[in-house]
Image (cartoon, rainbow, N blue to C red):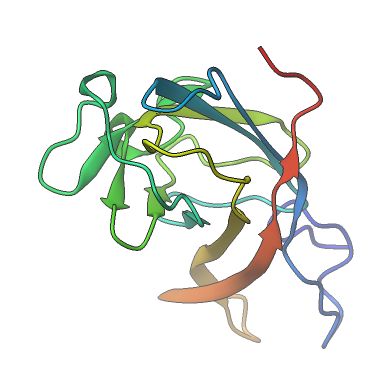
Length: 172
């Protein structure tokens, strides 16, 4: 009963599972027009995400980075708990697409562990309904074992299909 990605019983041939975000919620600090707004995301996965795996948030449209967000050259500073869950405490920010791509750091994302990440955006100048914000990812696996038990350096990427974020149960 080998454990792969912290998922039990994956040693059997063709035992397939789908990586998913079991917890996926989002909240905000200030829902007013033209305000600096801290967006907070809570995530937990059903398998380990190794260093180099990615988590992508989409649908963050009609926002712009704030001075609190420390945006430079297409990156957006993020705060995470545990600290430095994501590489450099920042993500690749595409304002036009409303997309933030976070790369998992050396500590990895561990199965059934809750992670929080937050970042600052500037709210739009006009009222709007909440956009559909989704989370998806790619789980990177950096080794493979052949039939002889020999490890081979290889990278395999398993998609984590997009899911809508649930609203947090609180507002401020």
